[in-house]
Image 1 (cartoon, one colour):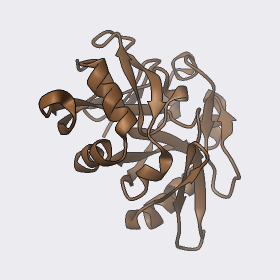
Image 2 (cartoon, helix red, strand yellow):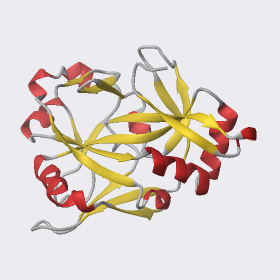
Image 3 (cartoon, one colour):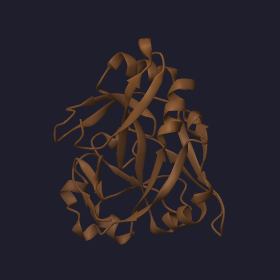
Image 4 (tube, helix red, strand yellow):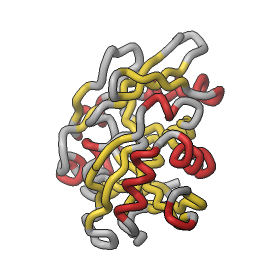
Length: 224
């Protein structure tokens, strides 16, 4: 499927993922959606579900190769500093347009399925659920993230990540681990700056009194 990267979104196939404030957001961050149907729509973070609640819920979905020659330098670098993870590297590294091409960087996708997201909001994420109930129609939670990695690490995720990713809490951040193959265990720390683009979910149906989430609905860039 085709891709497109602009200042405000990452397009993959028919869907557009938010880039605004991506450097401040991680999986399970929640907050208010600003400029809901405008060109610059983004989420202002209000809090984050504890990372230990992502274990068994956050999954790896696949990799996407990018033709960086088709990406504008000004669009790519417009919002904030960019970071990627490399195979065998201890932490995230900064990159720009030139490094993206020379290092053959790719994107990997991590997400929380809707049923698991709903269960998390109802059983573990009381603060997030209350915020979303109080905030109303503009409340959102980050349910899917795109992360930049080098080609070797992307390949390791493909060959070893299908069996699942392990999530551990490292203070207030999440450590994502994939084990197996000749590369052994590789770990990514999802701290601020590690998200390249993201998808949101909103609560589409509440119980009486808004004490329980009955249904959630995906929100891509360009949707209300």
